[in-house]
Image (tube, helix red, strand yellow):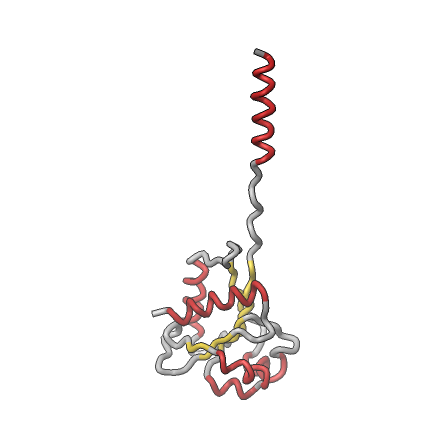
Length: 153
């Protein structure tokens, strides 16, 4: 009987040691550049909250967290800081004409999506894109975010 008990204990220990929880993937922060005082700001705030409430995840299972920059003037950042000091994963412009204020933004405008439906600004064109400087998981999260904005009805 004691030998049988020993087998049960050893088998149980092996089973417990073999079962380990996988580590939860760390959240991926997607940094978003936008005008916090634009005519679309209120609607965009709601779209961001809806996106976050949907528990978005990357293909790897990592949660996506949206963070917007709040301590900057939109026009000043467009002219001087963007893509120099300011690195972001998603850019949302107020209008297409804003791209002319910075060559780095203008260079990325050709792959922008129009998120006018998400901010209830249609028929205005509200361009949003992932800058070419954004790579890896943040860029993947940004693509998921933009897809959600572009499909909003």
